[in-house]
Length: 139
DNA sequence: GCCAACGTTGGC
DNA sequence: GCCAACGTTGGC
Image 1: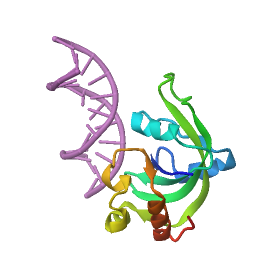
Image 2: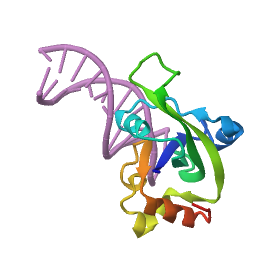
Image 3: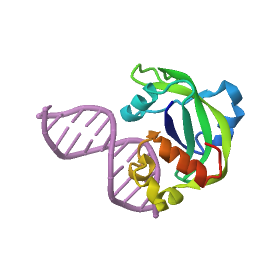
Image 4: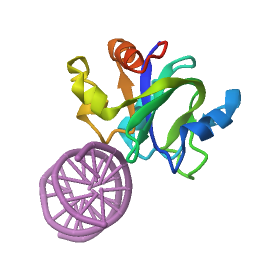
């Protein structure tokens, strides 16, 4: 059981759109970065992830779970790119902003804080619990 | 809207 | 295999 973080600009694919997909979920397509893809290849069904809105909001807004393991990305005709399917689990009671993560010394090693460009990233169990606590949300 | 940081591409 | 040029991301 591993933890991850998925980034999306809310005007491209938002948490509300993800929620609207329900238990069916949606493929996390459009990733064109090898590191991000490799992270998705390691995901297993049942892994949990944060859903993060980048650019405008810069905050974690919800929790998702992996509901299909890595498969070819149907949005492009190029076998190099794969993606997983994710579905919404629950929203954060209060969103956790990037600023809050940067302000918390326990999250100094978090990829979100250190490598702002990676769009699919691993989260440690400790970081997972801290961010959930900051958002008053069950881990 | 700007621009720094980063990743990718392609010429050599 | 190197690296300059280019495109994109995402914080500010």
